[in-house]
Image 1 (cartoon, rainbow, N blue to C red):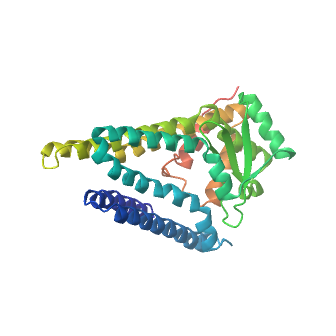
Image 2: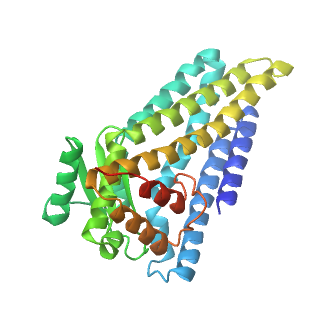
Image 3: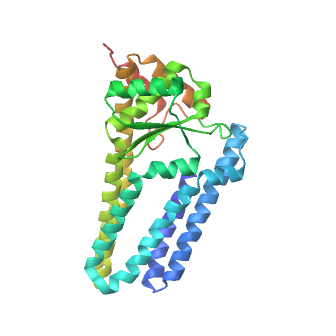
Length: 316
């Protein structure tokens, strides 16, 4: 699945500039929309078939598509950015860099409010009272986090047990009701402490800035290449640099994200004062979500590595 998604993304990156350079902006944006649509339908249908076979979910293909629809809108952004480059490049030349960087900063502002998009896209419900909120507030206060919102997401029909922290500026923690259904109070507290640790260390903000810097630098290299004489071999240098940055930068971000996960584990264990709830929570997440014990999952280290690190933490 990842290979298919990567191939589609690579094809869109390679084709769209070709259409733009041939002065066909309408074709370029059409291809962008078609590629994004195909990718979202493919991801949604694949999730439905795999989960239906191995987890016997009650969700339909439509449910999976609607849960991913906000990703569809985000996937369209690169096409509109490139379309703007087509119009501005002949008039502004190298100053088009200011346009591209301005768009990147606009995306940063959007991501700063991304929890709003998540709440709308996932029908999240804010938790403001009850034992769950009380436990969450105690942990947040203990960590010294002044303002953070807690939301639950209805993922029972998908049978997804997950929790994550979102928002680089205004912190929000999302936790699925399927996770709440299958974990003890101590395990839920450990999971919430882990997500709050991401907020404490501003991990989302750091990753967001890293990815945006990589995107800005990579796009700037491509703009520089378009301003150089296309018949010159020197135009290949910024093009090559752009591809290295665009494809190498996310790998650097993933590596840093895995380090952040281990750091959040340690902070969570020290906050709750016991590593056993975190270990049992990870084991349940592995079983509920059919995750492998060995092997990293992109943004997260392997479950075995995380458990080994947790068991080596001395809590005083």
